[in-house]
Structure formats: structure tokens, C-alpha cells
Image 1 (cartoon, rainbow, N blue to C red):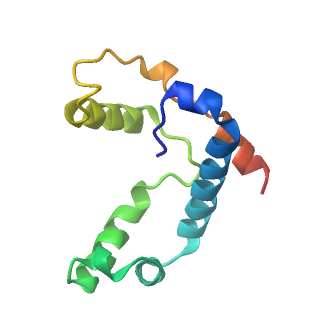
Image 2: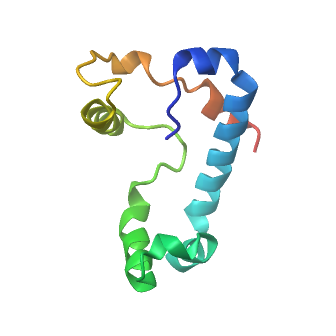
Length: 113
């Protein structure tokens, strides 16, 4: 998930599109990559000293990744709950989730296959 303030998105649409394109290409790679291939592509520090555990965690979590970049409503709510709990700037904010996801960038990335 790419999280950015609306004013940044509005001022920097080309940058946002480039970031979304990179995330989308990564999602497409993750779709076919094995957990071992994913582990081979990340810095060794990600393993926290236990590569086998990292590979197992990737295998267990891979099914939850969006293959399209579109986040379902439950996923958006989960992300919002986390941000509202831990982001000091957002604590206590009233968030209209219907207004927070701008899918024009992911749709453009997907159509550029």
C-alpha cells in the first residue's frame, strides 16, 4: 500500500504514478515468485538471523497480498485502524475511507502491461 497525502499526490502525479508502477510490477513478480525466490531478493537483514523462518513467514503471508493493487474494504479498514492508532498526526481523526483510495494510478499501471 502506498500512503501519501492528497496535496502531495495532486502536486506530484508523475512521481506517484512511477511509484505505483514499481509497486504493481513487484506485485506481478510476487504473484509467481516462490518464497525462496522472494527471500533471495531481499537484504539478509530481513531474515533477523533466521532465513528459514523468514521463508516460512513469506509462504504463510503471500496469500494476503493483493495481486491487483486494489485493496478490499476490509483491508482498507485494517490499514486505517493501524494508522489511526500509531500515526500521531492522525490519532483521533475522522476518516471517510470512501474518499481515501485513489485507484486511477493502479488502473493506469495495470493497463500498461
